[in-house]
Length: 400
Ligand SMILES: *Cc1c(COP(=O)(O)O)cnc(C)c1O
Image 1 (cartoon, rainbow, N blue to C red):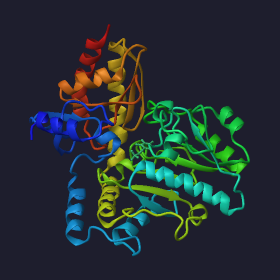
Image 2 (cartoon, helix red, strand yellow):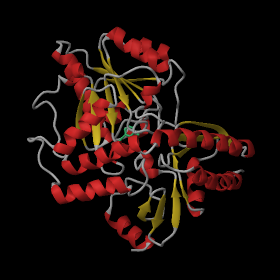
Image 3 (cartoon, protein in one colour):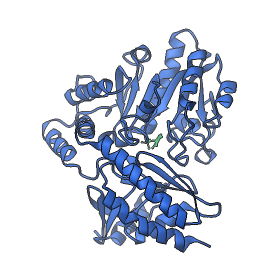
Image 4 (cartoon, rainbow, N blue to C red):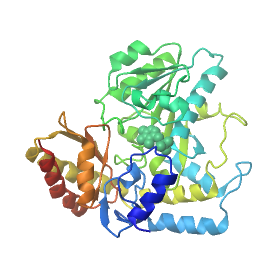
């Protein structure tokens, strides 16, 4: 179908929860995608940090094909081969000792909040249920995770919201120290805020947060849904920080585009989820687990971390050149291939996104004024270089 045929049907039948751009993407390979009219784009969105190995990665496609011919779904009433292998890989490469599988980021965070409360309640501390999150954070769209999210706009119209959530400014240890206490079940944070505008905390912040959690017996939940899966050049972003959380959540890149989420935890914490305490029909089903297993193995085998770090260095250097030529750019920041370009007051990142679609490049926003670039982690320096003149022209054409 052509772009307009697809768009017309969607506008009539799909709920309008997204302000969609006027193209329909019908095919992808590596860092390229094509729309219904055959136009090619270089993809600096990757499904918002999700197809981290590029579109239709051969190892993942092969694993899906093979699993589809073998066994698609059984219940978690039974042991599942690709699921246990994936859990073994994840515990072998992270702080975690046990894994619970689910279907999305919001569901992983929802599970993390439940697990933290259950842990405290099992210890006889039923009043220790409060969850502290950060301003500007994003944790998902279920009732509990949108309440944890530190942005008012996602909450409008959904009251009453679950009780026991509060917010402190991000990257502010003194504010956290003032808020945390004997009633705190957990602190939930992103190691780098994604939707909140690619905000990277100061050195030492994460260590300080860990210390405060230990002091008050609050669990540290790290939301690695956007920062994980190699996005910053290590499997999980907190692995740069010399600390470990009690719980971490994964989703987005875990299945390279197949929907799967995970809740990682230490044995001490995970042991509080016993039979009947938490469940989900599709969690870690054979198909999704096989895709995710092929994904994590490819991340490890294909030099993804090295490429991410090397291309990041080149990309940030080239973006500093763009900044030097573009008065509307205030700041360039990023770690690995999680990159944000903050525009000056009065400029909207969405305008840059629209112009770049015309030029054959997909990019995305993170808040109103941050232009976000989150390509596949195996993107090349040449592909990055091809974006630079288009970006300079775009910012020049936006200047008032
Ligand atoms: C995308 C995202 C979520 C929500 O994930 P869904 O799969 O859309 O529910 C939660 N936290 C962070 C940091 C994210 O980037």
